[in-house]
Length: 328
Image (tube, rainbow, N blue to C red):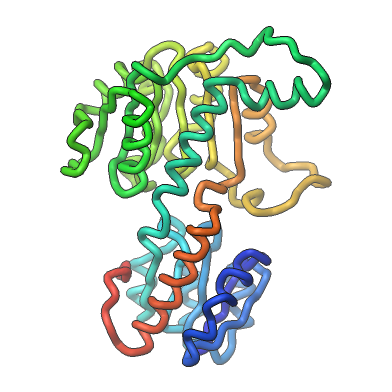
């Protein structure tokens, strides 16, 4: 089976190439271009394509792929909000994903962001590089003895909850389904979590019910001086309302690995570009905000797991086996 990988970087190639010899029945071809209706039109003789979190897997793209004979879309990520699953089913295309590659990688990055904004590490780094050893403006806040609110307690949220518990924090959780392994956490309503938490970390999927769940109304329910972290999906937070809350000094700090309108920027070097919108520049203008470029997943261990599960998915599909990672 020939698989065309879209939107591949050097680290993708290196990770998949380490194990590709273990899958002699799979032929891999790497393309640097992202998946779109235009790039899909160049697909010929491939039964499968592999896409990533910022690729376009909408109905127009899936129609082109189906016309080209593609039967399988492999998502080398956990998220699939960029995939039109109904259209995939309509065109007879199976969609498979990597549901759990390294939840600890994302959770550890979430805690790294939280710690960085809590202790102003981004500001301290710049000051010391300029030989400024003054501590003025660097007063931080402890996590020990504080309340952590974990929104979404799947694999990543559970890993974050355990980290917070290890810090000596009281852990509150909100989820439609309670995780029985988190016996130290107290499940509460979302309103209770917002009102009581000193640290709020988002770990839920982006759906109609969660889109813009952090907005002016929910921000106003939070404690003053709260730390907000998002390593899940940018659409969970209404950016204009977040910026309004920051300007009103609602937050001690904000750490974002994802944000709305990130697709054109994420994983790309745009140092010499004039950006067409001001979301990033507006966020970075605040001294208590840290933004990273969707790198929560980006560890050697996570890349290895993504590669292994993705090729296992392809091999299972080729053999007509169910893998448990199918989305439709």
